[in-house]
Amino acid sequence: MTDLLPTQRPLARDELEAVLAPLGRVTDHWLLSGGTFSAVQGVELDGGGTVVVKTSVPDARDARGRSRLLGYEHDMLRSERDHLALVAGLDVPAPSVLLEDFSRAVADVDVLVMTLVPGVPWDAAVDVMSPAANARAFHQVGEILAALGAVHGPRFGFPADGFRLGDGTWPGFLRLLVASAVDDAAAWGVDVESGRLVAAVEAASEALAEVTEPTLVHADLWHGNVLVDPQTGDVTGVVDFERSLFGDPLWGLAGGETHASGPFEPAKVRGYEAGTGAPLVMDEAAERRVALYRLWSMAVQLTEIEPRGFAGDWLEDHCASIRANRERLHAILGV
Image (cartoon, rainbow, N blue to C red; front, top):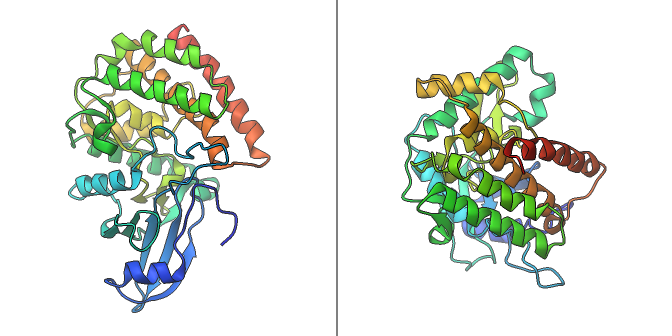
């Protein structure tokens, strides 16, 4: 297998056979493209069934002793398993967990085996889909985000490692999360304008305090994590629940639009409103919270370039987009 990122550790044929023995005999396997963090493989079993095998990021460090996992990225595969169990009873087209192996007995990574959800990744189909089909996909993503809000958590934040990055209040969690992002940027020598980012948390603190219920949020529902029928725009699957957290539902709406500084996609908002049965209120406090969520995400996107070893001509435009939007977001928060 080639073109793997430093964070990706797929299983070899013998490892797949050992892990998947309870489900059947492996007849073929391949690396699924599009991922930028964990390794994800498709595996065909005897009888013709296909499953998805996802592995955690190895605990290996770089030559300078730095973990390639950012502060909020630890134990994510276990979190994904738990989140998929929470959404199993909802009207959400998510994978089902078939098997897990966190023993490290077969390989040096955790392993999650899931059903293969049908469809084409939206980011690969968006340019050939009709405007009506794309609008339908946005609408259904909004409905899915609304459905996730029915699940409540015990604390705010990421549940990994017993809510290591979690708090009893939403402002408290954001302070911890931003401090973690600042530490990551410093470790990898990336300028994320840390002083302004920390000031942004404080500038948004009153707005953050309005969030009092920790509900389940898919924090990374961008086009690449949505599977669609390109002809109709129907959403056939949503994947990668590893970064899901408990907090403000607005984070879910922002999670698919991190390179932005303006209003959400209208069709997605309409879908969210249809799912909740109430209008989405985007007052000044809501806009300030969304600005902070996007600023955090942009800091992470700049930092992760280094530990993941990203390269290519696309990087220049990627970073320029972040910096341009970041200025507009700082203006919303006055920092």
